Image (cartoon, rainbow, N blue to C red):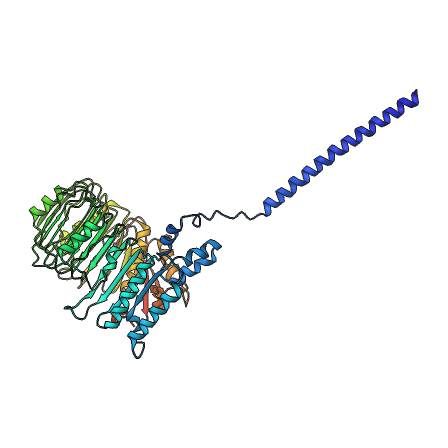
Length: 557
């Protein structure tokens, strides 16, 4: 009996041990699995979501259209398999005959052969192209015939943006556009320069949103046909077009922008478009044009270059548009006194309105003020709400007149301003302006004031690119972030900068031969406060001679 009980106990212990072993084995396995998964997660590279590739193809095409060169578009094919097909389906064709003028004998034939080969090899299997632009010089009958064929070829490929630029040598005979252009339902943008349009053509561009006609022979019936035949038209620009006497736009289209530049002979304009947001009118001296915008109550952006615009007509004009946010007045030489009372106005530009004596501005949300002229009509303007000011002032008798100086002193009291002074190939920047410096120059002086550090960098970059100054002086504290930025960009540049290696046009860094930098402790009374001493850092440039377009040179070699 005893032995039997021992045998049962031993069997139970074995079962128990076996059960424990099985449980422990399962636990060990689970722990090993957890450790392996944890290790894999630690070593795993989590790829970020490619949100751009998930966008619709037409949106990606729009993004690619901002790249400057076709080779940049081609480089996107390495991003993924999807991008290989995307860049292959995206094409912007641009052909310019001017590039073949110095190609030796028979440049016209070489240009024709190049375009023919390009279209044949690249467009074979394509169903749609984004943009087709052709620029050529009028004169060759054979070339004009080929251009008609190329345009038809692009239209058959459902081109969305079509641009035709013709340099007219004989103003008695313009390049006549084929009628098929005006029934292309795929077009969303049409830009014409130096062409002639059949006045009896039937326009049926049901998807066109942008229409720009420059230096083209048209009449008011043709423009009326465009307005009637383009129900989705949003942007209409007429530049130096002859033959239009009257312009009346009242058809219920979705027009948001209307620009009229030059257009000799256009004497009467009436627009009745509640959807219109931007109106630009730039006339010439001697052009007495009647403009009626009564039906455009939602207008936000108004630009007027009208030598016949009087004080009374300007006041009547802006009273109609209570939503105006930007006003630009250019060469309105009949203006003498203006008043603007609005809490919507954000930007005001007054450019070369020579006889404007007084501007009474009550606009609490005004953030940008731009002025160019002899006088200072803004003596009563409060600068407290401004974020930017651009002033092009003339210096009388080598000194700044009291009214101009008094206006500038308003920026001393406001605080937080950065002042850029450019004159005589020299640029001076006063960071954190505390006191207006002594300003004297024999030439026009350009002043830019901004509170934005980002825009300050943009201003300086633009001035260095455009003017190639002899010197750049910066008055700032020794710990200034902007000073560090300028030093690093100029003094730490590479001998052969790689910033523009993919672009034909290089930035200003590529044009520097040599730069010397001098630092000196800033003396009292040159734009600084006695409470904190600042230093003056000057960069003196030796520029290369860069040949630009049209044979001009950027000097200072």
